[in-house]
Image (cartoon, rainbow, N blue to C red; front, side, top):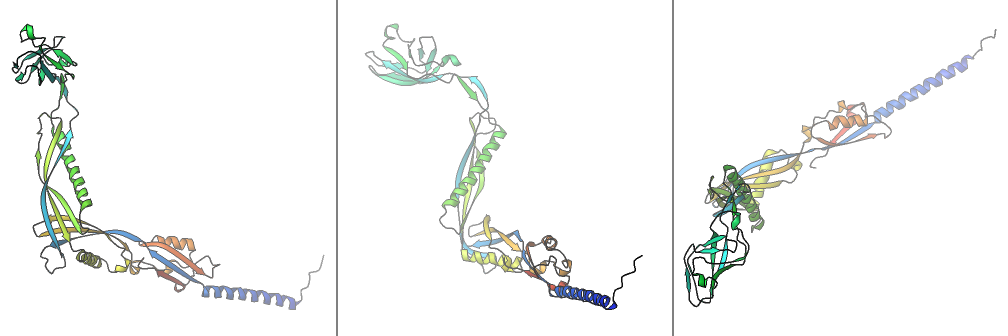
Length: 370
């Protein structure tokens, strides 16, 4: 059996000393890194779209009040009309009609009374709609209608005899048509309440289009128009026969001209009253509308669409929630806070993957006014 190897005491003590020194050095280095580690977090607040609505007066004789600015008001009345075509209905027989030229080759004038008969070669009878006198050697145009309703009266260009004349002159006095007779059928359409609603919608669309066109043509940028309906007249009542439902409306065109500098000051004041810090408000877009108008004053509504960022004091940020967290996890925690948009984290020394465990080594900077 081999004898145990003997280790000299001096070598054993030396190994223990070296190991202890290395452990102390490692602990010292770790402590130094922890003591020197720093994290800087830069936060960009998120922007939230907000809508500010306020009302103010435009007056030709402005009072010294915060909600009144100088301007002028004019009004005029205009009429618009709209129609909604009727496509449905039923076909009924009617009398075909057209224009005929009566020719007189006889040596004296020939009077023809209303309802004088004109007969086509196929035996289709037409009657004149008015009394005429055809001069000797001349000709006269007259409207004629078929004696019987229906498609039978829809004939092409033809020559017509006049049965009421003496047979000896029927070849000298006669009628000719150069176009077809039409209208043996017609579509009967009756106006309904639904048709009138469509016409009313068409009138509303015309009102909007007219206002848009007037705005495009307005002379000054600091001018606002409104077009309000005063009354409407139904030109084709329900139950009446017509090819379209027709409505006419009377409208008041109101023009309000305002002082642009006074309006800008008023809008800026409204923003300042609603927000604690104007540096976090992005430039506003403004839309104006006339609520009501009188002879020398008008009530306007202003809608400002602004972009507002959260204030630093509104963001609940506690470095203790982030200590010892990995960079990605710390970013997720911060981005979940309402009002925070972007997060950038920098750790020193750069090789560290976690934020310092000491909260006071974590610096949070919030960028304002962006």
